[in-house]
Length: 112
Image (cartoon, rainbow, N blue to C red; front, side, top):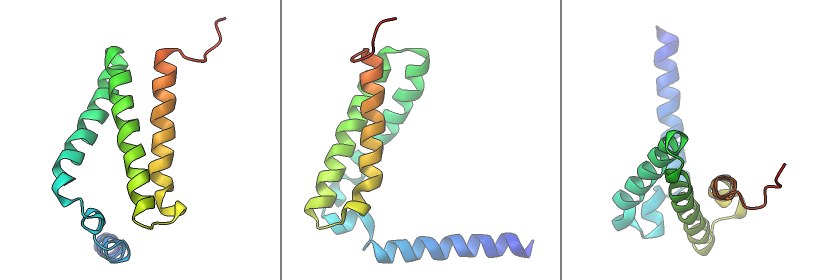
């Protein structure tokens, strides 16, 4: 039981350390007013990707929206003076979602 408590405490300390290192996340970028909108759009995008598994027409819209959001995220991070390493997760998600869009549209896929 003690090891579980220690694990929870370690995770909480890590979260606090990350918040201090990154200056409070979205607050540091001056975009607090977009927090709820960003969360809602990310949630809708992820739900759209799941629905896209069953109804393919959702795939392009969901992945396209997430691609656009991640592109804006990369630009915001770089304009705020973050390093490329800090922007790398958003850039990786941009590439993954862009691949999903391209694959779903059938662009660049050779016919067999």
